[in-house]
Structure formats: C-alpha cells, structure tokens
Length: 163
Image (cartoon, rainbow, N blue to C red; front, side, top):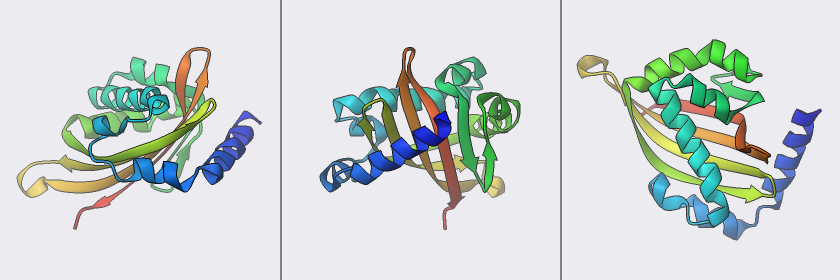
C-alpha cells in the first residue's frame, strides 16, 4: 500500500509542478552547478553519493541509501526490493561503472514535502580501442524523506548508444 500511495503522491506532485520550476532546473549544465534550489541540495547529494558508491562497489553505502522496498526499472525489467537489486544487478552495474567514465550533462528535479525527484542525463564511456563505446544515459530517482534522512524509493534507468 505504501508503494501505491507513494506513486500517487509523486504523480500529483509532478502534475502540480509549475512550469517555471521545471524550467528553472531543466537547462542547467553539470550536476554540481544545478543544485541552486536549497531544498534540492540534499536529495541531489544522496543521488551523487549513491552513484559514487555503486561505481566503487561500496554495497554497504548503496544499501543505506536505498529504501527496503525500492523499485528499480531498467531495460524493461524490474527489481522490487533493495535485497533483490543487491543480489542481482547491483553487482554487474558496479562492475560496468567501475571501468567507465561517467560525465554529467544535465540534472534537475523538485522537492514536494517529503518527496523529491531528481532527473539526470549523462554520457558513459566504457571500453578501450575497438571495444570503446559511448552511451547516452537518463536516470530518474524518487526519494522520500524519513527519520533517517532521504532514501531512494524508485530508480528508472535508460540508455542508448551515442550515434
């Protein structure tokens, strides 16, 4: 029931987002420069900490930043808990990211009460020589503020090869 309530609250928050607030964050450059909204600084810091921990294979930190019932959507698949993700895709995600260079392109989002969303676009370069490839990646994370601070309750990742 919490997931349904959270999804409904997020949908309402996104619908209620004024166009000016969306535009305020939509056209910024690197992630570090986009945290102009004071309320958004903490959620962005959690997203950045999560990304760094995953790249480093620091699964203890990844665990602390994910809600127990996180839903992660990627490539048409779904993982419906922190333990499911940590037991499966987190390992291959960390291995891939550990050997890749990730460059932030744009980041924005909003905070509505105890919910926040952070949308990011990045360029991921992996491999070397003939194996080198560049991916354009998008990521949306939804966070909820609780007694222990902000936790990630939903992630949606999507990427495609750069042409």
